[in-house]
Length: 233
Image 1 (cartoon, rainbow, N blue to C red):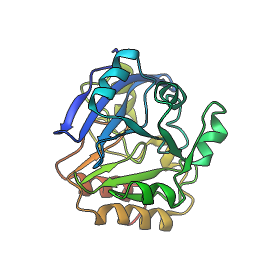
Image 2: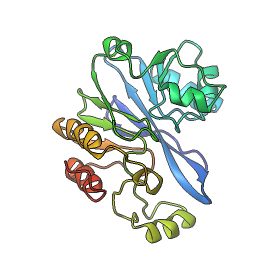
Image 3: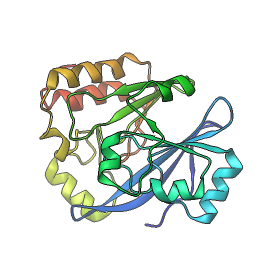
C-alpha cells in the first residue's frame, strides 16, 4: 500500500492522507490530517514524511504554518516534514522530543501559546495516561475531533496482518482503546474528566491515526471504548 493521495473529508477545510507503517509485526494505516485554517494556512496533524509531489500538492492548498505532533509517538515524520516546510512551526509535547533527537519543537502543546495563536481549536489534553501524553484538538468550524491513539479500529481496507491481529485483540470493526494504551491508565478519574471534555464538544466526526473517519455516533462510540476500560464518562 503506497502513500495515498489526499482525500477530501470536509470541502475546502479538511483532507486526509493514509500511509503504511509497521508496528509490532503488523502493518497499519497511519493518517495525516490536513486542516485549512481560517486565515488560509494549513495545519498538518501527525505529519507524514512528504514526497516532493505531496509537498507541492499541499502548497497548492495553502502555506503550511503548523506541524502538530499529537502525542509522544506520532513524531517520526515530522523532522522530514519540517525540512520541506521550514517556515512551519512544530507544536507538540516535550515527551516526543525526548524520544526523537531529530525533532525540534517550537511550541509546547501543553502551554497557552498554540491555543492563543490558532483560536479556532479547543486544545484538550488526555490526562491520566502519561504513557501516551496525547492532546486532542477540537476544530470548531468543522465540528471535528482530531486525535491519534485515543482509539483505533481495523477494517476491510487494512493489511491482512492487522486484520488478523485486530480480530484477536477485539478491535476489528470495533472502536477500542489501543491495547498498549489500555494497560497504562494509572489515573482513570483524570482520564474520565478529559474524555468528558471531548464529549461535551458537538463533534460531527472523529479522526484518529488508525481507523476510518468516524462520523455516525462518533461521541457515543468514543465514550463506549473508554468505558470498556473502566473509565466512567
